[in-house]
Image (cartoon, rainbow, N blue to C red; front, side, top):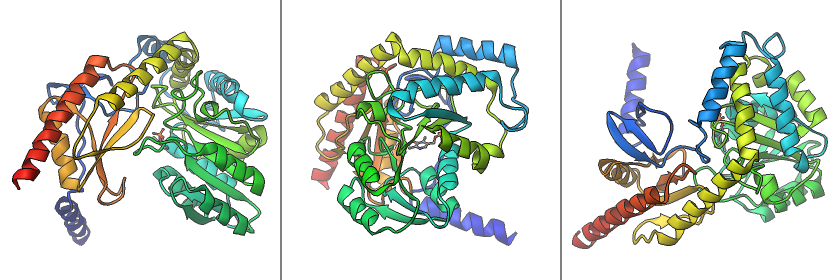
Length: 400
Ligand SMILES: *Cc1c(COP(=O)(O)O)cnc(C)c1O
């Protein structure tokens, strides 16, 4: 049992560093007001930015999909698991994103993690060079590793540094990879400048819009709409388990790129297709995102973001500048971040503390996320609880 002893030792090490993570068990649907360990809580944790995760029309569509297609797909897409509803969803996603891509086609994946692995490992090989933003999501980093390409990491949002790296590159395939909205900071990548560099140096720009799809842009088309971008150099990845409220992800790009993924991307080929009922439910989710209700939900979310940003006044903690639904408060040490989260928890408010290795050492934070299903009263309650906590902390500091 030497192996178990070794793991136990490393787990203890995590405890010492305040890095052991625990899962909380939610007993009700994903919503602002949830039941947690038998206790009602006001939650600011999920990425359900439009409040669609428990939307009655989407729930009904899922039921309808299950009645029509059953529960499982039975096989991978290339064997027999590709259903009519998957095909329709891909057509609808391609149409939705088409204003921003040339010859757009879309491919539906089980998860965003797999979509990122697929795109990067299929487009890059050992003779390629990948230029990766320093705050990129783990799935993009893992995709780059899987590809065996040379990887150059450029500093956060530093387009001058990227320009130098691109100018120096002799690789035949160059791929710039970035999150659109940074998941732990909430700020938006300088996509217009990144795209201009890609066009100048003949590189691809892979955009991971996990936190933008459905939320950014007047129609909810995401970061490309937000910046009014359109280019054949773009490869777009949007997830469908965050603002879209269901699950899975899609890649949209030039039809040839998508055909290449179908032929060569191992995370696409060697896995059982997602349940067709999920694709069916996503059709309703897309209708809502693209329609008047989606627009109203995005407008309400923007109101809540403005409310939090203009009202919250803190002495000790740094409220990062972010215009998106991700509103982090930098606390510093792991223990202080955990203490802040548990004090809020005692007040019936659930905000996750995010620690290394997800964020840099010394920047542990409360990651507040807002949803269109929150009310202005919910935000008031959060602001009040944070103000009380901040004042207590300041007092303790003065006394100490
Ligand atoms: C959530 C997330 C993913 C992964 O998407 P899943 O569908 O949850 O697997 C990829 N990239 C970013 C930036 C994310 O936040």
